[in-house]
Amino acid sequence: MSDPSTAQKISRFVHRLRTRRQVLVNQLNLREMQDSRQFLQGELSAIDAILQEMIEEFDLSSAFSTAEDITEEAWLHALARNPAFEFLADPKEDLYTVEDGKPILYEDEA
Image (cartoon, rainbow, N blue to C red; front, top):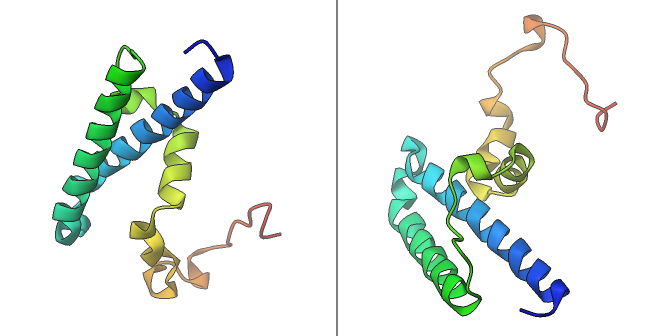
């Protein structure tokens, strides 16, 4: 990899794969995701195969990560785009009522 821009692209791609891999591992441990377990395991196997090929092809030391390697921002970004959590937008999932207290408005809601 003599071209720095190519190396950066590969590094970013590996980082995204590592993040997605860790999200899948965490989803496998969720009771709510048991119906999707087989699908998640297939996704995880595919990502592992891609990462392994990239390690060999580009002589990377290791593309596998632990949860500590992934920033909180990357976690939140990956989870926000994950359709598994869309049910949280359902008003029936809101356990709190107006009587519970004054709502906190975030910048984009104000």
